[in-house]
Length: 331
Length: 176
Ligand SMILES: Cc1cc2nc3c(=O)[nH]c(=O)nc-3n(C[C@H](O)[C@H](O)[C@H](O)COP(=O)(O)OP(=O)(O)OC[C@H]3O[C@@H](n4cnc5c(N)ncnc54)[C@H](O)[C@@H]3O)c2cc1C
Ligand code: SF4
Image (cartoon, rainbow over all chains, first blue to last red; front, side, top):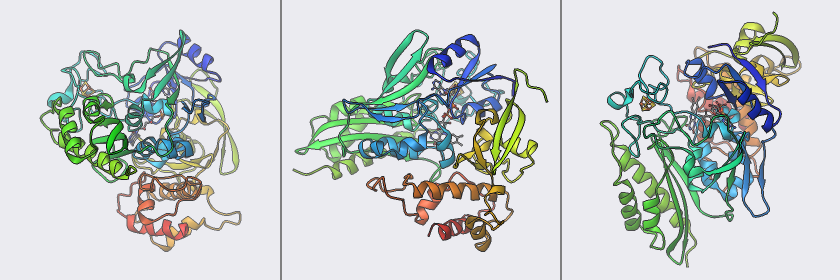
């Protein structure tokens, strides 16, 4: 690992100033992804600006009923928070589906959003990778890509985003709060991660030096049905092959509200907007779910070794929709 | 050792003893525990947070010490397997249960398993859910630890000898 300077920020302002004053700096959250990538030589910062002790460690309800999550809230604390468990079960479940108890105790909300892909070529300096070394090629396209994308990939990059949490945030219409030298702004969680296009090195819409300060969840009534389901190669402690986050409200046998996001299938959490549009206002039954999910996945472009993900993600989403519909109050 | 741009003095409280050490910023907490403080209980398995052999408790919470930079843990209270015993040297109930249940073969993953179990029991007692906890469970109540709960909560610790059935029994003994 390359030697580096270590600086601890006490305020948000100080963090962004330190970053700006030290070219090649990186923010350090829990370090569970960054330190790993530094060991592998993928990240070689000259300076680490430790933001993990910034006073952004709270989950709080705002007067309008929305819930603000500080960027330094640890994944385990967020998953266990009563407000999250009662109103946003999909978020609690997605967090608990990720990593291990030890890692969730260290991982921060901001760091989770900004974790890098687990594509093995990205992590191996001896291999070509357009995300790590733009222009070097994509090792995965003709290589090992069973875990890679089926939706929205480009000739440059076929990687997936590994976060489970981000999939739930996309389904919840959350906002990501950013603080930079130019001031503050918010970006919809759903638009925060990018598709690779011809800039696979850019995972997200964040600008250099911008700090994630929090995530805002829109108001949700206690008991709004939502859930997360994840398929992986072992029962626990593995990244998603595919996953589905669903929020569903059924009244008088009609779908009044529906949000669906897929994980493990694209360079970003995949909001299934076509499926949502097809379902809204209609019946919450098997035939409707099947039609809507098939319409969404008509856009899938599976690679040589990952066509299995198309029925996998369809079945996961179908199952979660069915379970949530069954739990809906009957009229 | 002098400090410079790449090294700092840090104060770490490990198993109740305060240590003042100069650390290279690149040093993980695991490396400092093992190489500078002579505490070799926490093990270096994969060194990438994938196996759990390096698990220790920081401020009472279980974490992978191979992914923590020591310099970032200035003033934190750290407990390793060497510090779990009681005041008169009695084994911690989990250490006792691992012996009684023969919950290991080569023993390499054991310190991490035990520290992880200590953390997992505290999390369940505090009401923290796991992926297999019924979402309808009262957030204020402690979570009862079935075998499925124990397996899920201990999934961050791999055992290459496959001693899992006995590890689950040992944790179950103490959870009861
Ligand atoms: C073995 C293993 C298994 C895992 N399994 C899963 C899984 O199944 N599902 C899953 O979702 N995740 C999984 N993870 C990934 C884990 O969730 C992430 O490593 C973690 O969430 C990252 O958070 P952190 O705070 O440690 O980030 P860090 O490592 O500190 O930072 C990650 C990146 O974000 C930047 N950053 C951090 N905080 C901020 C901020 N506030 N503003 C701007 N930039 C910031 C850093 O500079 C860095 O580039 C796994 C990790 C490991 C090691
Ligand atoms: S899929 Fe993306 S991350 Fe993986 S090798 Fe290709 S360019 Fe790199």
